[in-house]
Length: 153
Image 1: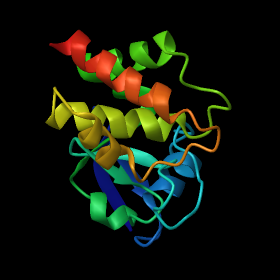
Image 2: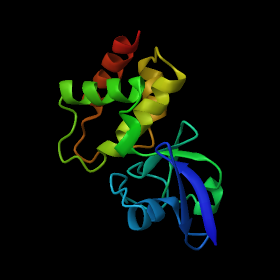
Image 3: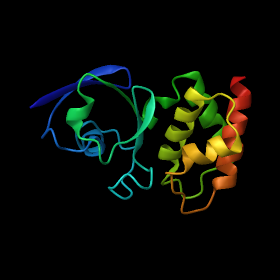
Image 4: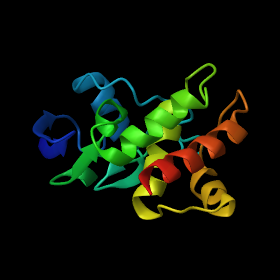
């Protein structure tokens, strides 16, 4: 069965089982490998993408749920001013160490700043709480989000 949706601003159609998780469709069928598999139960955030602008875990979301929707991945998030500001702040604050979780972290941070341009530490902690960084760069992540928010003001 073919599922049609918008991926990074372009219409796509994929012919996969409707129960296939979006993550595997993105990676295996569409070549979008920036979103990572971490846990498979939506607990770590490595697979985070935007669904209609909202940070969403793609490892548990069936492809059938995105029919007719807009999906943005890390490959395109820098194409708007919020995503670009977050990516620039990530570089400025040298957030990434191993880098495995960073696409999900950036997608969650961008989702937060799309909804709240002046987040408090508590807002940031709440929005980022589902993203695990095994390298422990949480302080730099928070500083980068504050910096991106200032750049957008």
